Structures are given as C-alpha cells and as structure tokens.
Image (cartoon, rainbow, N blue to C red; front, side, top):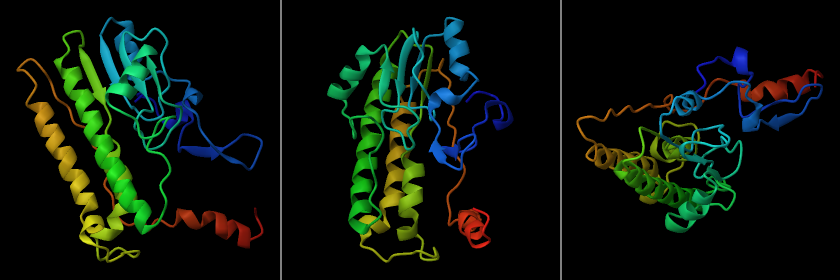
Length: 231
C-alpha cells in the first residue's frame, strides 16, 4: 500500500535473504523505506481508522485510530495501536486470539485445522464488531480494514473442499465446508456493513489473488540446489 514497486522498497516476501548471509529471516515492518498511502492522508488532516494492514508498523501521533497486527495472518510487527490506550480497550471489548497479535500458530493436522476454522470465524466476527462501531463514529473520514481470514483459510482448508486437490482429504462436513463457511461469513458481514453506509459514503472492496493448488514448483528450489551441491 505504498504505491511503490519492490524495486523501490525491497520487499518481495515475508522472509528474505539477509544481506551477507544465507539466512532467510522474517522481514519486519520497519524495513520499508516508503510511506503507506494513509500517512499522506493523515498529514493532510484526513481522520483515519486503519486496521490490520499487512506489514504495517505504528505511526507516531496518528490522527484517528491505527491498529497493527491485531488479527493478521503474517506478523511483521506485534499487536499495537495508536493511540496506545486503544490496545487495552480493543482487547477487553472485542478480544484477541494471541497476546502478541495474529492468529497464533496453526498445527497442520485435522484437529489443528478444526481449531483454525474456529479461530478464523471468531476473528472475522470480532473484527466485524469493531468495523460496525467505526462506521458509527462521526469523527472519521476514511476507514480501511483488512480481513485476512479467507486467505488463511484458503491455504489450509482448500484441500478438504476440492476433491481434485492433490492433497485432498475426505473429512467430515465441518472441515469439508470450512472454507465455504469462512467465505459466507465474511460475505454476510460485508452486506451488513454496507447497509450502514449513507449516500455520501463510498465503499471499495479489494480482493487478493485467487486460491488453488500450487503447481509452480518454486518450493523445490532449495532441494535442487542442495542436490547440485550449490548450497
């Protein structure tokens, strides 16, 4: 959300080679040399609420509400807010899934994925409640909220829904229908939020790329280099 390409800010993935080493390390949010679009809005006097933008870090003296890594998929920071007092209010009023933010670890098993469905449903529900109250506030001009639940669900739960998936597991309906349920829940939340808007409001919905089985093969690069003696 900087309007700049990776050629400018240097970020291509959430883990990257650390210069001078062969280490793949997580990239923290303060790595970016470019400002997010909303910093320009705030500097121009626009009152904003920004919630769970990926790879975000708190902006000092933010005018409005800035929530970082509350319910996010990949954490590049930790759960913090501006103003800082809002963190406790959000935690007590809406809840958290993990004390430091995010969804917490996902165990790659049937039981782990059942628990993941529960976490994603709760995450979407409590973020919807915050969004609903933000729309009722009269002191905000711009609201941007990211729901990462469908993306997380797609990575882990697609194989239960799709019998053509190479890793398909014929599980019980709770897992088979988990991905569809996450989609339907969010669709319902969006419908209810849009019903709160006035004729003066503008609603924009951005969607990430689609989800399907991954056949790119880039996950084999490390193994190939090892077998060639190049790593």
